[in-house]
Length: 470
Image 1 (cartoon, rainbow, N blue to C red):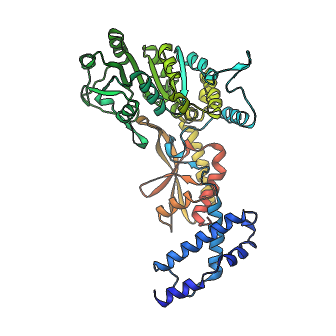
Image 2: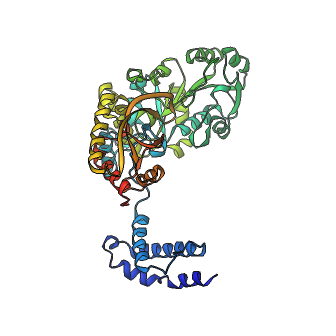
Image 3: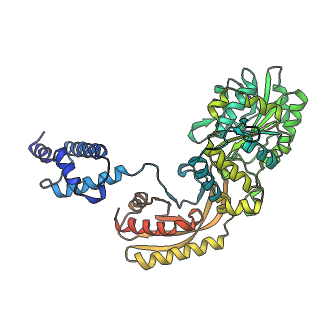
């Protein structure tokens, strides 16, 4: 260790001196003493590492500046890790940003469920213990046309418990073109292995015929599984067996037929310029015995895995001991019921469920909002950044509707004396972080996924990012 390094290390203040300084800093007063001491020790250790690695100042140790940096470190460290983020990416169901936003009515139901006791598992009519699933089962059956329904904590769990219940120790036949992997390395073959079912692949990557399934059916076959490829497309010379044809094959041989829809939807979204995808109602009407789909994503509710279908199979799944481990809590149940009730009136669902409202948002409305933000930014920050309105394409996201885009408008930022990577980082570090996307050396803020009530916070975050006041 050279003399310079040794001197810098000796100049570092002790923990007590740091705590004495912080006691005079108003913005950190009131923080728990143990948390302050923990932050001080972390910052001291970080500084020591930097000095030992040669990242020390050219001159003498600036104690006053170091103490100021310590105060900022404490503020940043004490911020909640889970925080609000403005989604300016244009991806409506953004997995990394929390997927679907809940409608206001669902937020109110969450407060009710969390702040008081409820009839979670109580039949108020009889005064006896009831089932938590009864609060949503009738609604799901009414909306989808299914005989019975069950809700677990996500769609992966729904697929797992259905396969474990109906296919454990037996064969489950799947087309090779449907052996999907989605985010988080969730793979259909892996889930099937965990369930105890034996995977039987049929067909080829691009084409599978009814005869492929029929040739693979034996006495050991428990199920024909169809997986909706909602997160990718195989184009060209392709072919898959339609749901009604697979159902007829299952009936002929007396085996169950199941479809994993992934991101299920209760509305036909083609009215908003998207390709028509099968709705849950379509798949149930085809005769599928079991249908699984997500409660968030296109449905626009909380994270949940929904199972609907024939009563004889859903009842078996309900009685699986795994159901206890995978069941939903009262907050999920309360918000899901509220969202499902909105679907009783389709126009209300499109208006009040944020996911649907963003999909349905008129392009002209988005342009007007982009124009207002752009003009406001030009008035305040034209000396340091160029602002323009540009046409872009939003995506539904959430592993749904791949290669389908929605025309939108964004505010493009081109800083004059700052690298675009620095601006992008500054926006992520703002008091209210903002996630945009970088294209052609411009930072784009797509207005489709920015709520009207977020515009003030967005404007403030842009100012912080451009001025470096973070």
